[in-house]
Length: 282
Image 1 (cartoon, rainbow, N blue to C red):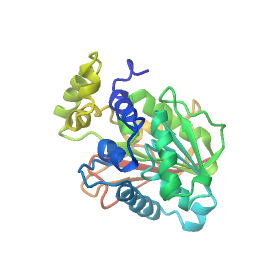
Image 2: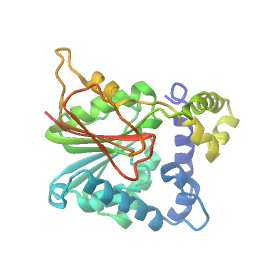
Image 3: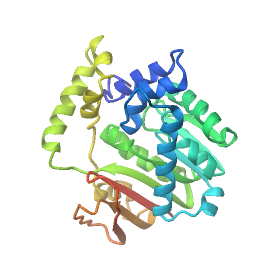
Image 4: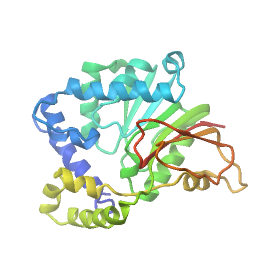
């Protein structure tokens, strides 16, 4: 899996660090930048989780979810990491399934939630192949993913999107974050490809993958437009599994979508290169 998906290398390397005998604050200092781009010797797990708490509350409010609605929901988080946002989800939702491609992160996620969330509401899910969710269909009410799908192999990101639809109950929601192309991609995409090739080099590749600047380049793994997602999800008869579809994007981006019956909404504090798909499942 790692050989085929070189962008997993830094994820695995950071996961290996979490397995060493270091405390939770040290884990955040060593690997926190992987999850929310924060660095510094003063970082603590508590401050790390608070950034996730603030983002969860802001996004779920902006996307129209009420506290009562969340309190009755089972939520799947694709790309939980060590639990930065998971902790708040376990406070807000009836049940949370934290999914990740690294088992070590999931162990640390449980520790994080034990301290800063409600661990009785937590279930973890190892995504061994990077694209398949070992869950029954129609088993969750909300699927949420933030700054994860853009780091996946292009086809894996599409497959995970389809999996998110599959596991969500009728009337439930997908809340998924993707990345657009931007002008800087003229340079970022080729550099990212070069970095991912270097990660494959024995011995030095894993060490190289722990360098923050290199990882930020190497994770330029895919760009997905809204219409590409809609086309991929469409059935052979032309029908879509989605309704009440909303695309949230930066106010600085002019957005044209071919798909009909999609509401586009500029949203402050959304990065110029990011967009969100929020939709109900039929």
